[in-house]
Figure 1 (cartoon, rainbow, N blue to C red):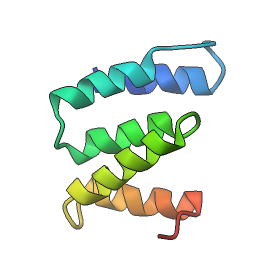
Figure 2: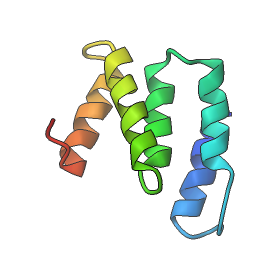
Figure 3: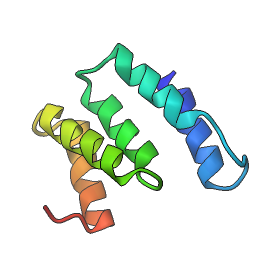
Figure 4: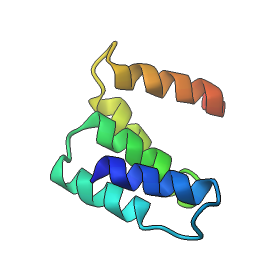
Length: 87
């Protein structure tokens, strides 16, 4: 469900579909795995363009849950640099 929601949101973001339930699918998947840094990271990305408060909540939670040196920790660092989020 997480990956389906992610790709639905990508299709929406690139203009292929006018609206999708991608973010909703991602949040449903997150509810099934509430302590998963990867799911929190994906939820943050899905919220980035339309809900800054939700983005920050999921971003902060992903950072909290990510194990040092893990792929998610590395992705968070990379995206922080790309987005200019120098916290």
